[in-house]
Length: 146
Ligand code: HEM
Image 1: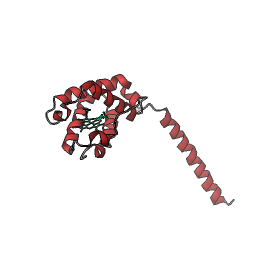
Image 2: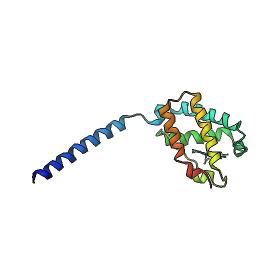
Image 3: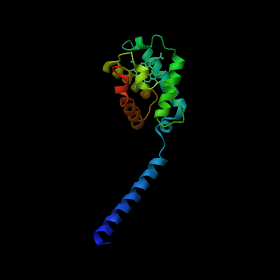
């Protein structure tokens, strides 16, 4: 083996060690679910979200026939699973759940604003707040215009 390929091998090996160390560090990090405070925290936020949204005339008409407890249970399970928690969401996928509602960008923005208010009520720190909003934002195309 010439000197160049030995050097390349050395660099690759160093890179692999660095990668596995950072993967180890990530694995030890707490999930978003844990950092938010687990299921009681999600239940509190979703309860507040329901209170805000059912009084929000921009979008509350969508929820006119919704049973609050059943819906909150589904939403808690969905968020718990999406945040890396130990829950099993058994409802529809996001597109199927919202098909036929023809939700608009404005509807989505209104709900997102309500989620922000609910997170703020419980003083969710900026990092976790950002992660929750990014997770919801990534679902927008599945939710609107169907
Ligand atoms: C990323 C954002 C959203 C998430 C994560 C989400 C999540 C969910 C979940 C988990 C369900 C239950 C599905 C099932 O039971 O199978 C649901 C249903 C529903 N969502 Fe959303 N949703 C989002 C955005 C919206 C928006 C923007 C609106 C309207 C403004 C909306 C209105 C509804 C309604 C009316 C239902 C049916 C409730 C019922 O069963 O009566 N959602 N959503």
